[in-house]
Image 1: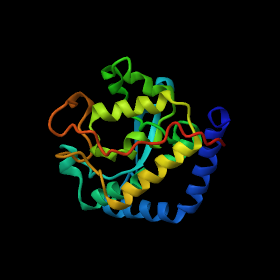
Image 2 (image 1 turned 90 degrees about the vertical axis):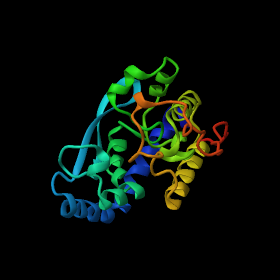
Image 3 (image 1 turned 60 degrees about the horizontal axis):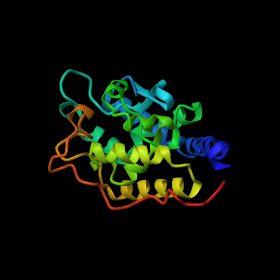
Image 4 (image 1 turned 45 degrees about the vertical axis):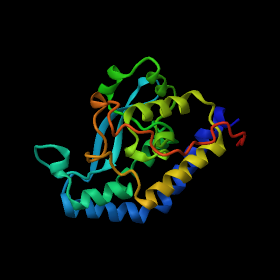
Length: 217
């Protein structure tokens, strides 16, 4: 029941309620971005969704305008936005549109599609999410090989309400503790083409979502 229609119903209800509850925070964040960085307040970027369909992902802008690497354009204000994940809140609109889910693999850049192995491409079977199994294992500190493996694991496992709830709660716990904001030596994460199994390519945390949970909607 949850797999057929319950997950989408939870997405619509959850995103709608969260948008209503977070409306004052969204307004304050938009004003803060405008005062700190100017226009545009929102950052729009093409990402790949379910079955490879592209959509415009929404975020509050966190980088200053101008040339240069992200690290050079990310000031203190932008770091606070990213660390708190407030910059991701506009993606609740993407959830309501049906482009994303509350829980699922994070949506990646379209050009990354050519870099997936056949197994990794299975992550595109499901809608991308605001948070996912990989984020619950350590957010951006989880290296690419482990992250993509967790994405595929989630995509190939029938969704369960209990498992999704566990992922959300785990992501909130990591967020509140400030864990995994960025990969070592990066503003967020290295690009996928730079993936590797070097000394920083660990396994994230040892936490495992109960994907065999039998809870039903």
